[in-house]
Length: 255
Image (cartoon, rainbow, N blue to C red; front, side, top):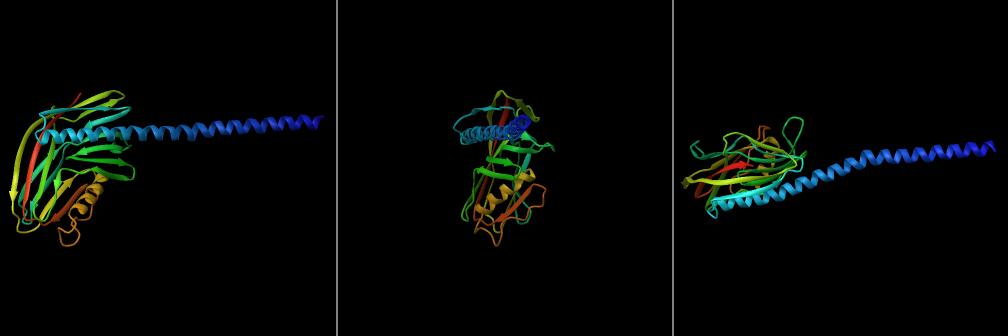
């Protein structure tokens, strides 16, 4: 009789331990997996919104509309009109054909260092998706590279307040964009190589380098782009018979 009682107690202890272990496993790994899924969904939604944002900026740049407003749902993320980055096109003798500074629009979650750990970025007409492993250019800028004729159209975002703008939380915001000016910076027939440089965040530099290397394939002797040095500067050279550079400034307000 005592053996049976001991067996029942051991059975109860084993079953209770299994239930406790199962609940703990689900709590730790299940909730973590659910949070990862939610974070991924937020970034997916942000990427779709940034595709609309990019279309709206092109409409403004091409004269289709004087202004546009893009709705973006934050969903416990942050949207920032960040500090300016720059790009420049120069001749082989160092003469500058055109230079611009543009504020990127950054959506997502910041890491411990304050840099974007996971999210979406719009900069100079391109849309990039960023995660811990690096960045992928989901939408290319309005540049067209060709041996006969190259066209570079800079889409330059400026802050209407003149400062960094940032919104966080779970609300829905509007990114209001208004056309400023469109300027022809240069129209030139180079006799030698042309160099284009883009200064961006180091994690996004590799995506820009891959883009340029694809676009400039066959337009230079050897590898068109210099190796990255970790600074975030991407520098690539190419040859073209004709180059035209324009810049459209767009004033942005996050409401």
